[in-house]
Image 1 (cartoon, rainbow, N blue to C red):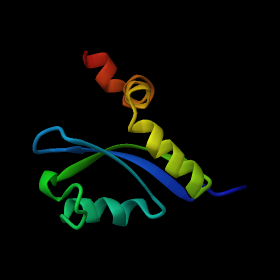
Image 2 (cartoon, one colour):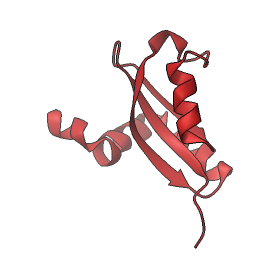
Image 3 (cartoon, rainbow, N blue to C red):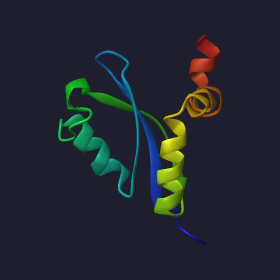
Image 4 (cartoon, one colour):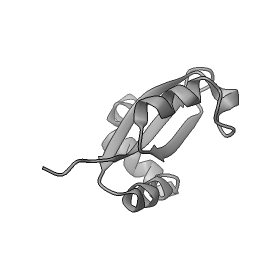
Length: 90
C-alpha cells in the first residue's frame, strides 16, 4: 500500500474567519506553527482551526492543488465539495 505523504490543508482563523490554504509534509507540527504565530503570512490571524485536509502522494501534486485552491474556481470547488458545511449554511 502506498503512503500519502503530503497534505493540502484549510485553516480558518478563530479571530475573523480569515482563510488560509497551504501544503506540508507534516500536518500537525505545521498546524501548531500557524497557531504559535511562527508563519509570517498568518501570524496576525491566529488562532486557527483546521477545517479540512487532502492527503496526496507527491509534493508536486500538493503544490499544484494548493495553487488551484487559491483560484476562484478552486475556492468554489472547496466550498462545494470539501468544506460542505459552508454550502449547507448558505
